[in-house]
Image 1 (tube, rainbow, N blue to C red):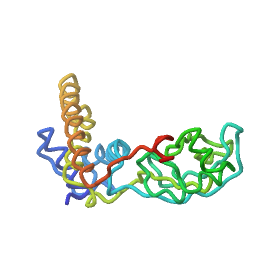
Image 2: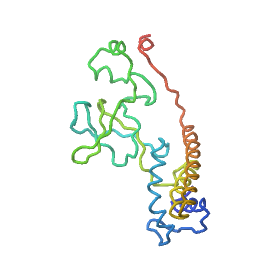
Image 3: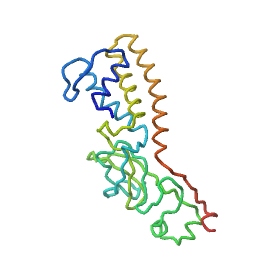
Image 4: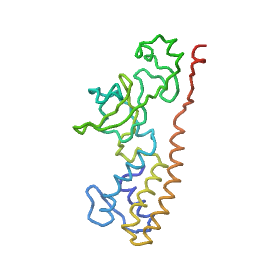
Length: 227
């Protein structure tokens, strides 16, 4: 698996730069190391937030905070390591990809279950919004009680990345490095070409990562739920 330095050197090689770096944290002193230090974390986060990667996904029970708006019944603190929130779920959800009726849904609404089914089934993933409180606290707002968040965290260990994701990461980093290293119109042109290659490589990496899941979403509509 590639290390942080390996990814930087692969990106430089994509640019035809014969130089190699030995360290970017701290940077060793070369211009290439300084540029890699500058762009590596930005490119890493851009790739990580582009997909719910299996190697960078967590789910945690959210910490309840006082409600901040009548638009949402509950406010929770966003986890400090959350890079991209994907789904807010009931704590007893058995499947966070399907449409169904969580076990707690009837008791939460106060309605008989047959009445809940009459008015329509609910998505197991719940609606949510992200805002920032006046004191700077990052919030997850939702109508889900005892909510669980599935999210991408900032996975800093590149040895955990899949080969296809690493390839996409290298191309994105190279596209950012092209301008500073090659300079002028030529650098901009190379950067654009590398970014196109990154988009294609990212699509492949997403597809490969999705194959690690065997999920077949099911939909429960009211007339089926009452059978």
